[in-house]
Image (cartoon, rainbow, N blue to C red; front, side):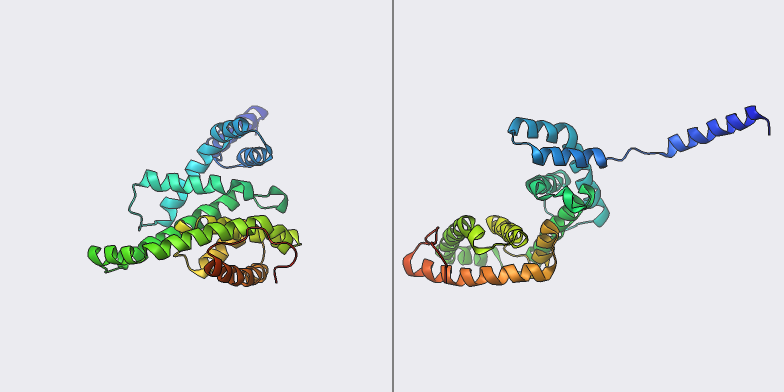
Length: 247
């Protein structure tokens, strides 16, 4: 084949390849932006990084996951659901650790999917409920005092763990797991109806550890929880700081 024709063929191949090549919306550039975001201590810089380098990818990722997995039990408009997912990814952005080898795209895909699964399941349970409005109102009024105590207890127990986790757990791995659990406790209004398996999956994805390690940390927290519960209902409050061993 003449040299001229060979060059023409090469040019045509390059054109075809160029046409087929699509821009990746959540690639290395976005991963680098997330790392830069987490490394910055400046709110204005973080806002700029998020707005210019991350938001579009998060928005597209949330849209794709919602459309791909067909979550049908949301009573909010599509854009509102997408906004909730993006917000949840932003809240969890500081937990992404690029040094563990996981890609940002994979990490946030799991975070977004788990959020949607949990809320979708919760909304499905509400849809199946056959309680009438009057019954719900009556139960709500009867439970107001209990709910108030529970909320206060939750606030105080979270405060206690925030002050004492570093003393309770010596290993960094266990401490990371414990902080993830406390983060979920802070969002109790959103997750109180989630089942144990779903929560374990979420914690595992947040910390990148085995389930056995999570169970070990949970068992320690349970022991403290029982003692703190007794203290709260005896004295009406919890001492946020314990000196020495709790037990």
